[in-house]
Image (cartoon, rainbow, N blue to C red; front, side, top):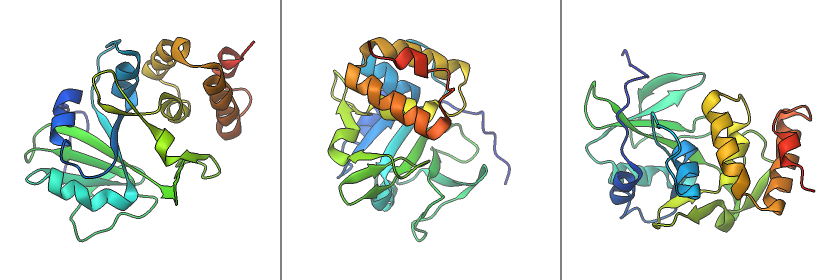
Length: 202
């Protein structure tokens, strides 16, 4: 099965919020859209839209996305159909969704791991935090992945859009958030990371 990985016509955040309005547990918008909603301003174009749900709730997606085509990404990056009979265990976490065969991709869903009441950073499970602190609300009530968690993911391989997102969010971060992000970036990606000097708190 051949796929065009670039063929995206993503739902808007408002459309996602409507679609997930009956989702019975936690979800949030992540990625660049999540950061733009955090600052309350659309700062750039967005080629896709990312969501996060907890791994334990993955099969609830089939109720919300009834009638959609749902695929999972096998590492390092091969799409295949996903059905409700398969439970996605690590390292699988990346789900792509479209409304019709050969149609554009509409949503990308990331599965979030947790241990008891702690969320776990996928690349280093020693980094964690309270589940209740992982999701915040935008001004219009859309749930968002906390920006410092999102920036920690974006810090891995910095693309132009990641640099843009970091610069736009940085003025909105509180001192303790900068300290946390600086510490965790250094832990995961090394002490020579380009963002660390800008996260110094004086």
